[in-house]
Image 1 (cartoon, helix red, strand yellow):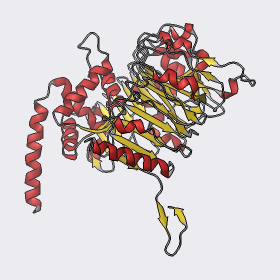
Image 2: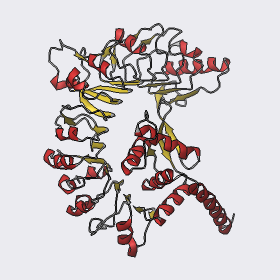
Image 3: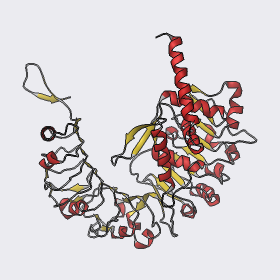
Image 4: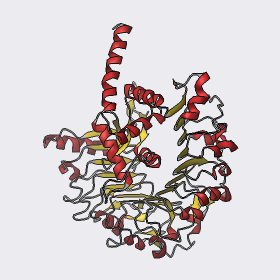
Length: 521
C-alpha cells in the first residue's frame, strides 16, 4: 500500500472518530479528553482515572444511592461501549482494572484537547507545541502532563496567571520545577500527581510550596526520606477540598523506621481516600469520617470499637501488624472482633510485618463484616484448622488471596458447604502439603492460582466438577500439580467445557543428550 493510500485511510478513520466524539454528551467529552494526560502506550489504572475525574469536577452524583466512584466507573463503561476506550485488564472479581486507548483515538484525543487549549504534554514521542509557543501553550492549558525523559527545564511556575488545574509528572527523571517556590502561583490547581519514580533519584516535595493551593482535591507523591510533618500539616490545615491523599515510598516493603503523618489529615472534611506505604504511620481519627471510602493502613492495635466507629462507611481497608510491638511471649492474640461494625466494608487486607504464630486472631463468622467480598492475608501465620472454616462460610466472599505465610500447617481440611460465592482463589508461598475439599465446595469458582506451592502434593479432584472454572494458573509448583491440573482440564473437556485454560509457568525439565539426568532451565 502506498503512503498516499495509507494517509487517506488514516484521514477517513479520523473523520469517523471525530463524529463519535462530537456525539458525546458534554460530561463524557471532558472525561475522554482528559485521557490525553496519560502516555499512549501505558495502561491507565481505572481507580486512579476515576479519582482524577472527580477532582476535576467531571463526575456528578446523579443517583442518590450511588457514590461518585461508581458514577465515574459508569462514565468509563459508557466510553467503552462507544468503542472510544478499550478494556486492558480485569480484576479478579471481573471489574475493570486498567484501560487503554487505540493509537488513532489517542491522536484524536490529544489533538482535540490541544485545539481547545486544555492539554500540554511534554513527551519524547509527542511534541504538543513548537519551542516558540511552549510558554504560551502551557500557560493557557488546564492540564499539564510531563513524560519527557529529557525535560526541557521549562519554567512552568513563571506565570503571572496560570490556568492549570492538573499537573502530572509521569516519568522517571528529575524535574526540578516541582520544588520551585513559584509553584504557589498555581492557585487554581486541583490535581497534583508526583508519583513518578523520579523520587528514587533523591528529589522530594517541598510542602511549603503548596500551602496556598487551597483548591487541591487530589495529591499524590513519592518520598524516599522522612516527611516533614509540619510542612504537610501546613498544606492540610488550609485545605477544605482534598478528597484523595496518596503517599508512596520509593522502596517497597516494611522499613525499620517510619515517618508519622500529621493527624491534621483527619480534619479534611472531604477526605475519601487515604493511602500510604507501610513505612508511614498516622494516628487513628478522633472524629467521625463518614465520607472516608478507603484507608491503607490502620494499625491492628487501633482496631478498637472506638476507632472503628469513626470510619463507619469504609469500603476498602488495610490492617497492618507491627512485629516489634507484639509481646514476646505471644500469649495474647490480637483480635479483630470489632470489624463487625463495618457494614459497608467490601475489601479487607490484613498484613503482618513478620510471620509469628498466634499473633493475630480472626474474628468469628458472626463478627466478620457482613458485606465482605474480597479478603487478602499475608504473613498472618494462622493455623488452617478452624480459621479456614470461618473464611469458607463468609456468605458474600468472591475473592480470596492467601499470600506469603498467611496460614501454616501441612493440611487444609474441608468445610461442608464452603466457599459458595468464591470466584477467585490464590495460594502463594505456603507450606501446605495436603488439600482436601468436599464435593459441594467452590461451586462457582472461575480462577485458581497457585504460586510457589512447592510442598503441595495435589489439587482436589472436586475442581473437575466445577463447570464455571475458566483458568488454572501454576507458577513454581511441583510437577504433580501440573499433572493434576491437566487431569482436571481433560475431565472438564469430557463434560463439554472447552474454555478452561491451563497456564503452567513451572520451569520446564529438559533431558541432556546421552544422559538420563534432568535439570531445570
